[in-house]
Image (tube, rainbow, N blue to C red):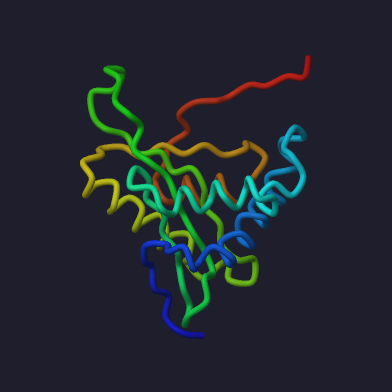
Amino acid sequence: MGEVVIRKARKDDLEEIVVLAKQLWDTEKPFDLNLEDNYYETEEGKDGLLKDIRSRKRFFLVALIDTKVVGFVDGNIIENDGVYRQDVAYLSRLSVMDSCRGMGIGTKLIDEFNKTAKERGCSFVKINAFIDNTPAVNLYRKKGFKDYSMYFMMKI
């Protein structure tokens, strides 16, 4: 396998990003039974990804091996409404192709996301994960993220 290259996502990456987003969705679905089935395969899901790729307010990066997209990360700067003293970036999605896990691609994507966030003036990066998604939680802790908050949800 070739070298891993991280670059800004482009609209022509959409097809491969949809595959990775679906994989992410399938991973998270058991943790949140309220998630729609196959969202990223719908026109709405694809349009949302394309909008995020094109947005100047977001940063959307892909990892490539040779010319194949094998992972992505995206997020945005949380608009400072006076709550935070310093700007915060929110890492909203991270996905690495199942067959490429354990190769450090997730780590490289997070590192590049953090670098981009810092270049845009952010001092902090936030991310959330389902507590039972052990591989994701372990990766984030390994990368230096600290347990910060807990969301609660109940069906009524």
